[in-house]
Image (cartoon, rainbow, N blue to C red; front, side, top):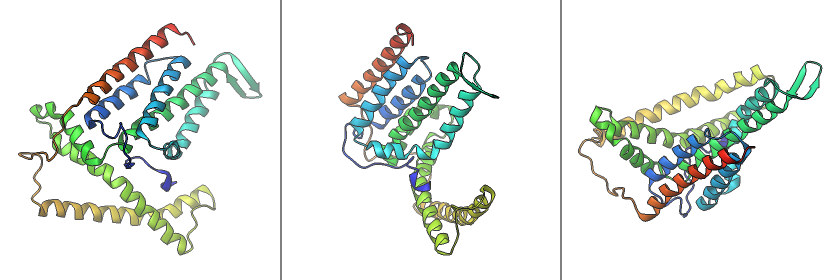
Length: 268
């Protein structure tokens, strides 16, 4: 399961999405996530599907890599679908003893499954196509107006960047610990749920110690380099909008307009 977690990882490949300004991609992802809650029918999901598939194709990130990132949230998807299908009242589609399924439940369950899948894929596409350094610069630039209110924008952006950097490192560390424990006879696949949870302690404790040590070493390294935050710091590669970035903003606005129009005029 830990090998299937791909969030926070950068997929190195040349594509049109990779070369966009990080601010554009951050804003586009927020618009996309909000748009998932602006429609009520399958026609809206059709528009969203076309949009996200086009974005994935343009990013040149393999679909298999995208689907791999859905495995860690598969339980949440199934859990959500179960409760929506079996506990939504309405016109009965299937009934047996105390089990009843309504058409409204099937519709709502399908909607929620698609929405969760699109949420994960769309948000993951941001980290797949943006390096942590560029993502930090983009977040800091977008939040810069808050600095006038006393908000430590640079520190917040740095914290987000370090968190994203630590995700693949900790996953690799966890996989190394699992292999080491398995070589000593530990079994994480067999037994009852309680026994498997107890076996996970042998992973979590060394992982916590390792992550604490890495964080301490990182703090010492930053202090040794006289890091004092963003005050007075300059950028080696300042962010600048280009024509393709402006066109991307326009495409996002067009996407929302088409989505709202289709949802309003197509009643299904």
